[in-house]
Image (cartoon, rainbow, N blue to C red):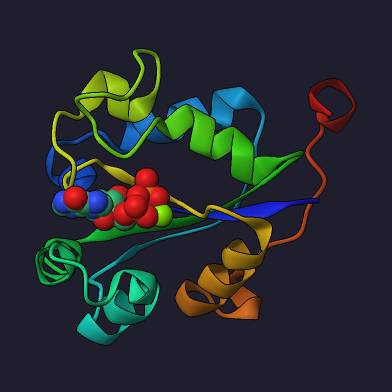
Length: 148
Ligand code: IDP
Ligand code: MG
């Protein structure tokens, strides 16, 4: 079953939107595999956003991601990567579609509340950055036959 890394960035925690955002992922039918609140070390933020190194917003982005606790989660389900990206909405909160997390709760480009892996390959890399194998639980949800 496909897995994805979801981060509720420091703005989501500060704005007390952790429950609202997590509730949407649960309601979708995804299974929660791992969850922790992290005071993100600078090196972890650098590794997580390595693909953006050199971009004008890179330094600001690292400052943002290390500015307060982040909720790190792994979610699993059919097409979990695409399903989460669709629930998140496009990067710029001002332009994200209503009904998405960013469309409903974000106005900023940088402070857009949530990170979601953009491919199964990147999900595997990112999950390994944020979690040890022992932190990833295995279980079969009781509603598996209904959610698919
Ligand atoms: P994504 O989170 O929708 O995948 P990416 O392009 O991968 O978007 O960018 C990673 C993060 O960097 C964004 O979620 C946002 O926080 C920040 N970011 C992206 N583009 C900009 C920008 O032009 N200005 C400021 N921050 C940006
Ligand atoms: Mg991205």
